Length: 244
Image (cartoon, rainbow, N blue to C red):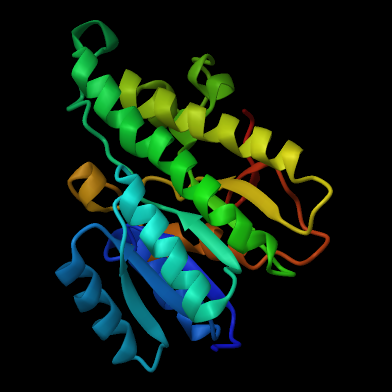
């Protein structure tokens, strides 16, 4: 049985997820690439192995409970526990439309991945994380999730100027998951936090972001490797705490 620290990253075959995998792999973690496309997951794992990183692909679609449960069983059988879960998989389906023009199906599909999928993975993986003495959960959120900043015209124009209901509200719900799971787990060793990677160039935004994946992944890696006295139930970007 592998004795190194294990990290499962949903949607880990590309973007911030893949870069987080690369950075954590360089720190000695065993990387489990969760990918709904088996071939793309295997390609990502092979790329990491070429950098002398211990990595493997696990088929995992966050909207498919069977694949989540199968992934958990494989991790339990192979590793016995899970040290870190990075809930990275997400979608942005708004197409820039204002709330009144959003189709209900788009709202539902967004929540299916960004909220319900994250909840499902966290719930199924939690027994494995509880077996770890250093359990960490990092939920990928966004500065656009901050209700405080969204309601302040004087806040960062990047945030106040965006008004897409499905994506933004789904990430606000992600923050709620973080707070409420943290409350439940407050008497355990597990730390769970939300991460804002900033406006990072990824497929999610058509690579329009001005930040690199290396920059975006930095806060994810920091929260994944928090010390035992680190924060839990909070919302961070690389500069510090973000208001809810």
